[in-house]
Amino acid sequence: MADMSPEKFLVTRRRLAWWCLAGLSIAYALVCALIFFQWVNPSLQGQTSQRIAADSSTYLYMADVLREGRNDPFVLGALASFPNTLWMPVFVALLLKNTVVIALVNVFVFLVSIRLFKLSSEFNVGLFVALLLINPTTMVSLLSVNKEIIDLFVVALFCYSLTSKRKWALCAALIIALLNRYEVCFTMILFLFIRSRLNPLRRRRLLTLFGLVVLISFCLPLLAGRSLATRFEEASSGGMIAFLDSLEMHYLYFIAVIPKILEGMFGELLNVSRWTQYSTDDLANSYILVFNNVAALVTLLILGWKRNLKLSSDWVYFALLGCIIMSLSLVVQPRYFYYCYVLFCFQAAHPRMLKTNKYVLKVRDFGGTIGIA
Image (tube, rainbow, N blue to C red; front, side):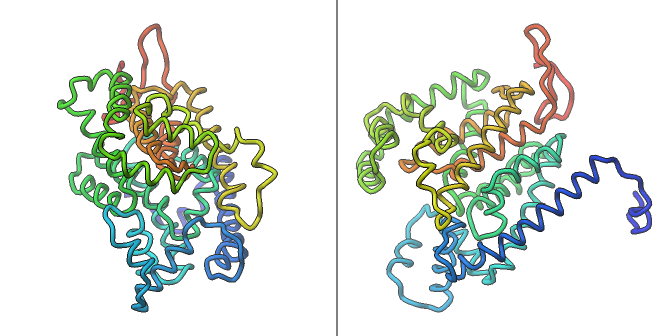
């Protein structure tokens, strides 16, 4: 066993990259602490009118109602349905109570998630963490009660279950995802199915995704037409998204899916007219969204440069499947795609795929051995 004594740690020579990474990590932690105590925590406590952490204030309010036994029809009605995306964040707020404790637990969950990813595959951990942290959604997730930090954990647990074949990890990932964001749970189950022998097209991944989109296009209006119409009336605000949602409700999701994915991941970069409307009182829907899109663009550029954006990668396949499922939402939000972003970061941190003639030399995701694909 390696000597882990303090003396050994202090005298061990470190590379320059290690010191740079350590310095940046400390600086990031200090910035997070400053932002938390200066802006995030006061907003969660209702001391300011700023809206920074998306729906965190709502989760905290619901937890207070349950803790105090108040009969609030809005809260009880919102929590009564199933599946429900409120249960997990409200449970966390109810259990931990204090916003400082919530932030500390989020940091612990983040570190555990990185460890699970490390156990899943060999990759550049520094690059992976850097790509996660340049996305402001990650920072907000670390500092408040939210669903995104749980999404990160369940995806890490799911990836670990695939490589380690640990059934308990798979069950835990599915259960937690179902209680947190059921779309993620559905994506996981669907991913397992389309990779299994039950899918005759399992080796034709592009054709499988295309067939899935066509199937959704025809089945969704038939199975959920009335629900879609009601939600469309509630969510519609005009513009491109309303038009794409209308296509979705009229058997044309196969036309709307790619524009909706692009809108979800890069919409704020394309919508220049909104830039002048940003407000410091609503950071959750302004500057945070822009830099979320910038982070997604940077990650995809790295994937393209490293030639890693390929369907032969299970992580890319899983991420694209997630994008298709999340685009079904009539209200598109970049944070809905956060778990897809995590998977793209994970793949970007892997070694470059080397193309030789018509073959691709790569490290297999699920085997850990070098092979020809």
